[in-house]
Image (cartoon, rainbow, N blue to C red; front, side, top):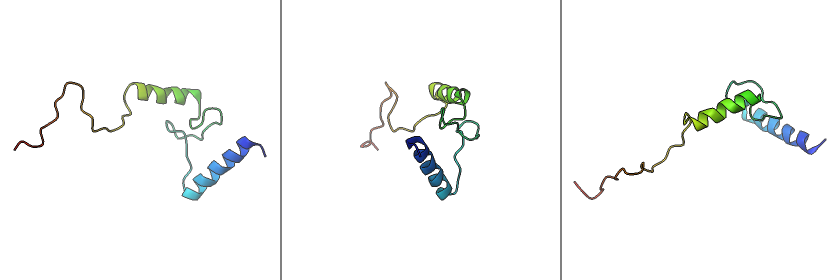
Length: 75
């Protein structure tokens, strides 16, 4: 067994153990080894476009530049 097959087997065992199979995050098809976790280059590019277009966002407590924070001491 080569190193790549060992990793694949481990990932499959973990997915089976957790009770769910992981598919492509874009379309849900089984992932392809060369584009993992995606099924194809197309889905990989769609996901990148979503990140660059700010469809996906990571929540933050930071305020946008120029916006003043509310004063906590005022009532």
